[in-house]
Length: 127
Image (cartoon, rainbow, N blue to C red; front, side, top):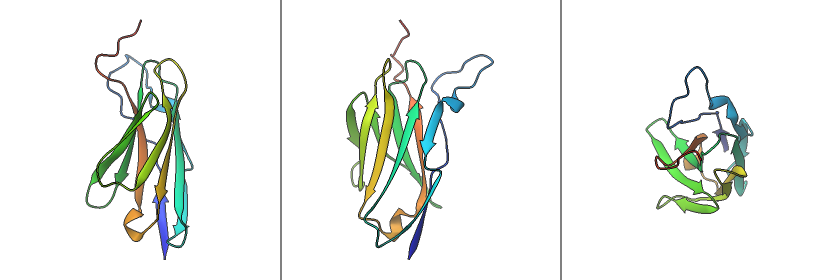
């Protein structure tokens, strides 16, 4: 059985910028992966260049719902309970901002749309 894992680019921004869009500063690779259930894992990456944004969030979208899988804050992975993923990377507000999502032990339930988003905590203030 083949699984279609599609990774569109989507950026959630927690603030507005007059006359500009930050969504083009979030990059996700690869755009699409087709895997067999005999494959052991799938991996994709996300990076952004938005100043003061200190989180990279990962989501899974099925026909029924959108699920937050977890997020990277600075160098710390935070996963939602019951998810079968690993999140690595760094999302420092002033430094490197990249994350990798790894889905292990692929099954039919993993066939979905996956996307990342860049965010910042509401108390993060520009210096």
